[in-house]
Image (tube, rainbow, N blue to C red; front, side, top):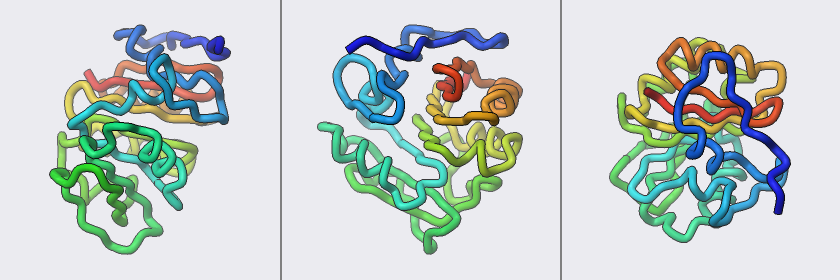
Length: 181
């Protein structure tokens, strides 16, 4: 299937374009998990994955169920609506959900996250500056963030992530992928 969405380099962007192309979604609105393109390259064995504002956890569960090495990943979802939960980064292969605020991310240890997933929420519903600061605080060097769709908030997300040390690439008109330097 042809990739409908081109990876567009933002004005302040540098980094590994090939990696970012692998992480881009091939079909917007229809998540494809496969060997060539899509989200499969986003997930990596022995990584700690954080989904921001997980809500009902539908997207998170989709990815979890579609990944054949899910038992090697620490799956963490945070949202303000959850009841208090305990995060254990050593627990792999099961979904963990905990109550947390995007403006603090108090339950996630500093420099512990390898991958961050934001599906329609963090940068559109939170304070983009605080979200970028907190995501940076909990991310390991080289961490990768995938955010979509950002719509009118794309520029704010790019500016705030770049200011916090991220290389950022836009995907299409309203999504991005970034790597912490």
